[in-house]
Image (tube, rainbow, N blue to C red; front, side, top):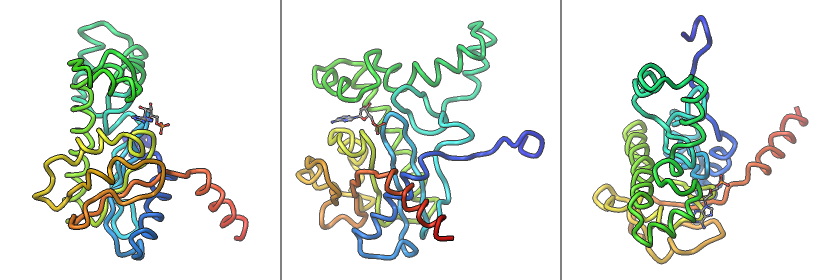
Length: 231
Ligand code: AMP
């Protein structure tokens, strides 16, 4: 498939992952080339990247942005046989299946309410069952990738969060990192409530740092243009 049709993994959100990795190195006061980082871009689209000493060694999105984490309206990775079932047994067209997986799934599909986590949070706090399930599935999907990438890199110095959900939702961050104390990841629950600026939100004793960094893809693009023009 690759040799004939160039089917391959691309990954997406690279500009954002690169920006927050560089900022994390500044915040940690260590060279990027020494750090093992897991960067999580959690917005309406979501992806996680393992950055081993400055090099991206794995990322959750694939040929298209559909692979990987559960997202606002995308299902993320599911059993590929489901797609065949949708087409062969349910009689959906390929376009309908594609639309369902990209536009009607994820937080929206599971909650049945909205792709916006603010709406789902309000509903979950009112004990809406599918809203609570959506929160749990989303946080679990991030947790699983973080676990996978810790093993991919044989360790991690810091986990960095960005984008709409990563920057703003203390409840989701609390759920993602809940119970990870035995593997050296401990949130400072007060710092987790702060908003709007770069900050370390892990406890001082946490072996792995957890950092929230508002992404700035525009600045990264400007810096790249300047570098290219200088060449
Ligand atoms: P982005 O794609 O980075 O613009 O992220 C957009 C998403 O971030 C929205 O659809 C919301 O789900 C989420 N979001 C933004 N602000 C908040 C907030 N205060 N609490 C929870 N989720 C938020």
